[in-house]
Structures are given as structure tokens and as C-alpha cells.
Length: 293
Image (cartoon, rainbow, N blue to C red; front, side, top):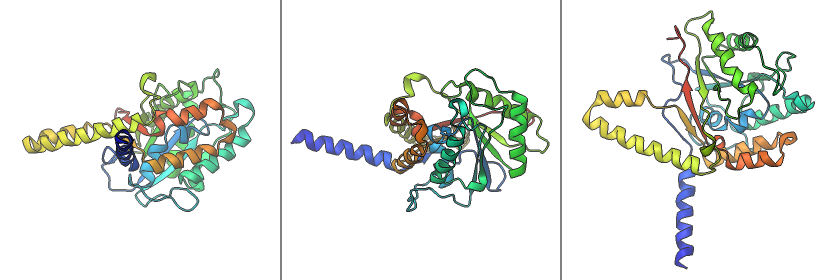
């Protein structure tokens, strides 16, 4: 009886910790007071919910937990306008037309408006493990979208690509090329999703638990620093890595979004959504470009 009550107590604490989403405080904040127009650049349909869901929900809801609407979708607030550019329809297996429809349904669930998203079926940007995408071509395609929609912040993969897919890994080079030649000052800020080692990539709910513990510990250190040195505390906060941690509702909506990609729901993707760190935690690094400040 004692052990049963103890287990219920521990489970209650874990659920309480996981329930609400959190973040590092003003992620991707620009110096301007203008509303953010944030573009997520991905390679294939399903990238948006497999890797970027915590960030999409965090930005769409002002990083606060809002109840999902009756259809399970998440709506945007007035502070952050979210956009999605998928550079291919994922036609490696001849399912491009199906995967494009799945992408649209997934983003319906995740709350990105149909006017703010597109999946390209471009002969020069085909889903492939062997064919390398041209960096200059990526730069031109992304620039057209960024300029047309007046994007202020771009989010995408880092050079590790999270899953080591070559289409993922080439995208940041194209975006950096685009920013280096951007015709308007200041250019958009660019953040990349950090690829973590395989040893901590599939740890399930340990990922959000540890991330939240780290955040609470950091806040305690900042509070102590406030009492000792206001200048030192400010410096530490500026160096904080932007990150988002999903809440339980966010995770469940991400699962619902992934279910829209029914053509991709093979056994190992179910394992991925059950144990992947990226379903719960997104950590970001800003790509500093010369002349971008």
C-alpha cells in the first residue's frame, strides 16, 4: 500500500511538471517592437511535427498553454505570425501528391494558416538521399518567400540536420547565402535547431523533465546574481540559449498532427514520436552573419 501511494505521488509530480509548456524567455526577440513574422523552413512534409512542434506551439500561443479548439487545433495570437516553407513534397517514394495533402492537414492541426504555408514540388528540390540540393537555388527560393511575406526571423535545421538527412543539412547553407546577399537592412535573423548526440536524442519524457529542471536552476542562479550584480545578471540572461519545452497538451496535438501523415506511419516513426527529444524540447542557436547587426 505504501509503495502504491508513493508511486501515485511521484506520478502526480511528473504530470504536474510536464503539464505546462515553458521557454527560455523572449526567444527570437528582435530589437524592433514590430510583431514577429517567423518562417520555418523544412525539407519534407512531416518535418514540422517530428522536429519543430514545441517551437510552433510556443510561438503560436505566446509560449503559454492555451486550450486547444474543439477540433484539436492550435490558434495563433496577435504577436507572432507563423509561416511554413517546405522545400519539397517528399516524393522519394512517388507519394508526393499524398504527402503534400498530409502537410496541409498537419498544419491545420498545428495552427499555421493556409495562406502562410507552401510545400514546393520543384524539379531541382526533390526528396533524395543521393542528390545534393544547390545552395544558390535554395537561397533564391527562400528569398522570394521571405521578401514577399516580410519575414523577420527564419528557423530551420543546423548543419547536422537533426536526422543526418542530406536535404536537411544543406538548408542552413542556402539560408546563410540568402542572408549574406539580402537587399534590405536589417536582414532576417536566422536560428538553427541544435542537433543533439544520439545518446540523449531518444530519452522520452526525461528530456522535458531535465530541460525544466535546468531552467528552474538557471532562474535561481539569476535571482542570486540579481542580488549580487545587476550587470552580471544581465549578461548571463543575454547568453541564454533560446529553447522551448512542450506541455502535455502540445505533445498530444503534435501526435494528432503526425497522424495526418498516415503514409509515413511505419513502426520506427511511432518509436520516434514516443521517445524523440524533439517532440518535447527544441534548443536553438542564432547564426551570426557579418553585417546582420
